[in-house]
Picture 1 (cartoon, one colour):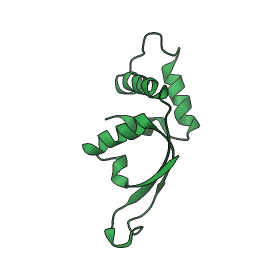
Picture 2: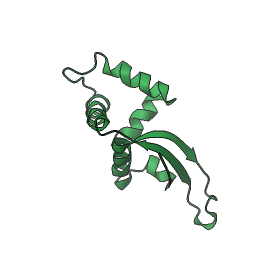
Picture 3: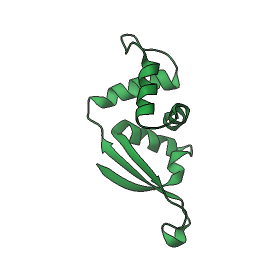
Picture 4: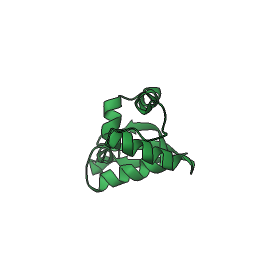
Length: 109
């Protein structure tokens, strides 16, 4: 388990932020995100978040990458994949308490 402080822009900006989100999502299960205001670190004026996460097991990484790439980014099923990938993903997103469309936006490049 880990908790790291990051600028809140990590959640929505493009460019290097997109790559950072990909690295985080490929290597960690996000357990919680806590958002703070701009006065958290006094004079910086930077909106910050704390990202609570747990390292993914090695075998979990390829499955996550393939399913998210094919289903979320390309909207296509994979041969010999789960019988209903869309339902699986929607159930997972509901289980972690997020909106499905928001989740797709978060993991998409």
